[in-house]
Structure formats: structure tokens, C-alpha cells
Image (cartoon, rainbow, N blue to C red):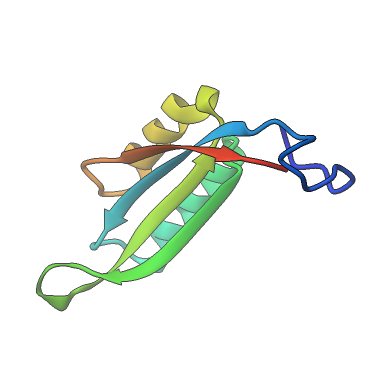
Length: 99
């Protein structure tokens, strides 16, 4: 379900929707690789794709990938993350969302 701008923003009238955040850290990829991976994820149905800057071991600059998706899209999006990035693990977090 997509958020509808005409629906009231109220927990009393809208039931929470369950979504999933996939997250991983990447410290050895070029901006071109990161942009390509984000495009592939969006094309495959990711609702949101974010890159957050962070520091990893020994102060190296790196990126955290965050992908918001529906539960039924998890496997497809994880496959893209593993194929298009150098990560060796993905964290999952189930969240509730109200539109």
C-alpha cells in the first residue's frame, strides 16, 4: 500500500502497515557503483533507497545503504544488494507505518 495524500494522518482511522528496512554498510565502492545499485533497487520495487555517510574501521569513510520495502519484496531486493554491492551481510528491521 502506498501512502495516499488524501487519507487522514490519524492512528485512530488508519491501521498501521508493516514494512521492512534492509540495511548494510559499504566501505569500498565508488559513487557510480552506489548510484547504479540504488537505481536497480528502485526499479525492482524498493519504496525508498537512502545512502547515509558514516565512518568505519580506522576512520575510513563509508556508506550505509537503507532500503524500505514491502515484505514480499525482501528476497528480490536482498539479491540485488548482494549482486550489486560488496556487502557480506544485510540487517532487517520490521517497522510499522501509518499513512
